[in-house]
Length: 149
Image (tube, rainbow, N blue to C red; front, top):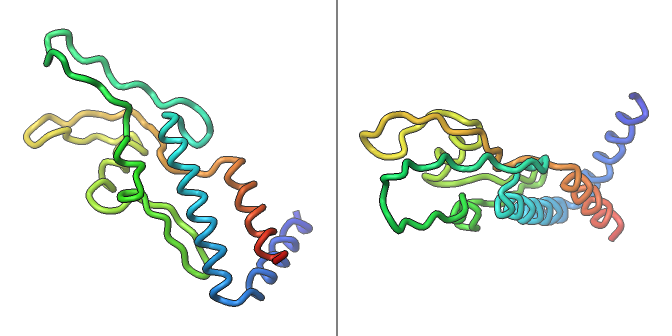
């Protein structure tokens, strides 16, 4: 395990040798690409590890007629609510505003009230954000590209 630790230290030293604006540009590029990756996962209705989201619960037969069910989290994956942030030392993708609470409930499978005055309902766990093997490869390629230019 020691050779891997020394590699990480060397890589950290190379990144630290970059000028602060170059570090921030690299982090910003990584954050944008991560946001795009997360948006695609949500669009495909799958967790970062590739497993599909659990489907919505079936509604009772005698509910509103003519109601069209759309795919989950359509607005949540827009750039308005899913932000890519970067500093010199980190890149992050996060939900902002009032949707943070809804995203947390679905991500962790918590209990919540779907409307005011309604009973609490348990939600299935649907991981919205996370890193996959492809994301790690993308980050690695972006770092190598930025260090080589």
